Length: 502
Image (tube, rainbow, N blue to C red; front, side, top):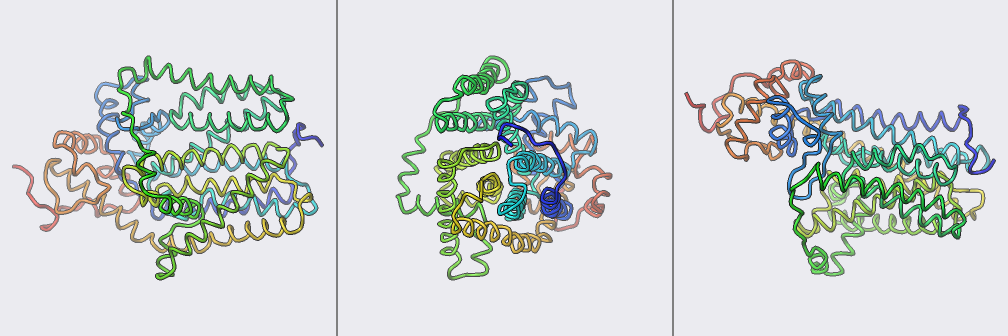
């Protein structure tokens, strides 16, 4: 059967087994959200409560409000805004609901990968069990409990929309250039461009480079269809850029240019090398558990893990250059380029401001893990029967270890769940206390409750909005949903610094 001929769906043992193994990983993440997810307004969410929900409840919103973004390098997130409205109307602004939606995005992304991989992978023989192992690793790594923040902070969980958009765009581009099916790309390219803002640029660049590299490998045999696909992707991005400049974000000042590269070089090559190895290692495991279990050698072990992952990336690009890609490998290459782009954004934008240690922020682990997903997807689409025995054994062992490490990572994250839950409860209690009078001072405020540090007028507006519309911590329905009714009790004598005004 040729690579261009789609295989009809027929349930087979390896597809069923892959779905069952993936279901374990996704169920584990869903249970963690149910146990430790934070339903309360957190950090960046307070900005949109004041700037977006205020308009919704006090006069209405228009199209440009859906594309609202903060100064300072923020991205427009219209899908997030629509979810925020739905969440407020249907669930009283419960951010655990958004975390489940984010996990749903991850599920759809993996199912798209499975759809491609089951058509490209072997039906039996030497590669069937290894295909199953590779697809199990894609699921386990995609929703790994390497760090719990990916599932307790809904804004991070919703970031799964990025890889979903990338996979959808890559599949649509493949359908266009390989099978001359243009309708999916005609629909997906503008949808991604007009819904993902800066992430759409990263998706587009990844797919464009992937298409160009594929055509170079094929010596320009299908250059006309490739050029047409490139034009559609770039055209959609240009159209959004013009709409943004002329209407959606008209008048918004450009971000000032910064010389981030010179700042990075100022760290020195040793620090940069260490940071690169740390980034590679973080795609598999956070550094904190190793430091906890191996106090004297945890950091060295983490760098060694990074070196092994870097070698795996070299294998990945060796296969990219040697193999004649199928659709699964095309998606893997696009996903790897997307991951590199996301990492580059963190390194070039955040690290110069906050230092090399900023890469260890747990909120970014989900992005780093996409590199492992791409590695496993490359293995799932490869022709194992053509490999030498050493390569087959090495890749099999590597995949098995990646799958096996998920158990201790998950155990470590679940172990911290009670403390995460207590943190969220404290946050909810402090929001309730602010509701007594929004301008009062509390004895303590958790760092993610940034409204405590907001200007007085903004603090009053935001808390009053939530309280008057019975949203979030002021929703009895939401508190009852998580058996949190005690959070609404009268304040104790040590909880307030100043009493509310008479």
